[in-house]
Amino acid sequence: MKVLPVGKVPIDVLERIVFPRVGVKSGRVVLGPAVGEDAAVIDAGDKFLVVASDPITGASRDAGWYAVHVNANDVAVRGARPLFLTLTVLLPRGTDEGLLDEVMRGADSAARELGVSIVGGHTEVTPFLDHPVVCGTMIGEVEREKLVTTSGARPGDLIIATKHAGLEGASILAWERYDELIDVVGREALDRAKEFSRELSVVREALALNEKCRVTAMHDPTEGGIIGGLIELSIASKTGFQIEERSIPVSEETRKICEALSVNPLRLISSGMLLAVIERGDVEVAAEVLDGLGVKWSVIGEVTKSDRVIVGRRGTTEAGDEIFEELWEALRKPVARR
Image (cartoon, rainbow, N blue to C red; front, side):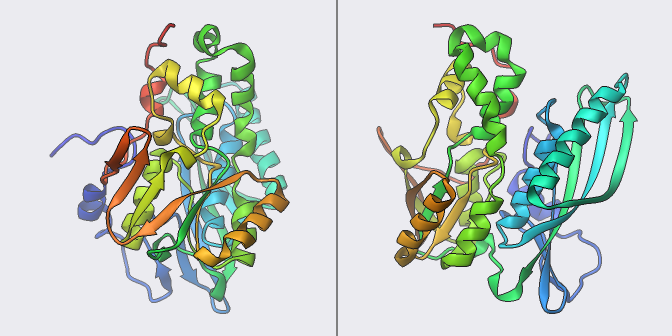
């Protein structure tokens, strides 16, 4: 048996060990476990229920805030409105009430912002952790005809990205490695990067685009960054893509942090950045929707039949099918001094 790498479990392992072992089959399951699919879909009669689960493992601050938003995002990219959340809060030995208070204050604030009810979960102090781990399960609902999957992209569709790549990872790194980065990145840039976590939600833009545009697929690029998200989308849809690297927005703060830690911002966890695939004729409608919300966006490429191509400043490369996350290395890498 091979040792599993840090980060997402490799696709071949999922297909061999995880996906075949999902208990009793139900005719009410419209969409179950699959590569790239953010949430399950269950037939509830006149509507579909959408269920998503995600943990927060890399952030020691604002873990409750993150847990609500990343789970809400996974529901919203199905075209569904997030409604109900359960939380499992695991705390390290020696935790005082202050940390639990911080986690729950953040979760409550994010839930109120989105109109979500926290309906249950579990809270525990365990001796096997060195920082809090918060796991969420979000439930939402969507009209049957408005359901969106990651697998619906078609050749010729355009790919839109909102906000900027690596924003969640940059925020985490600004918080976790502030003192080490301050001389290289600068205090003002790090302080701005810390606030990127306030941009974590894609709920507004996902629901608005689905309401007004012919959206064929949506995805929330988390671990593995925007490149990982694109690979998952193409695997789910059995398509390829051609992306213009220069069209992918990356903030100056994120660039500085990534350069200091020698990591690729395009493979840095990117919750808060929405990948939306739309029919080519709807780009003007999408522009009106996103501009009206004050959300920055870019057309970064198109869906193709097979190859996963990234057109960069130094030529064209194949993205392949490897998904890996830069955050884990960046949390412990030495800072490159100028």
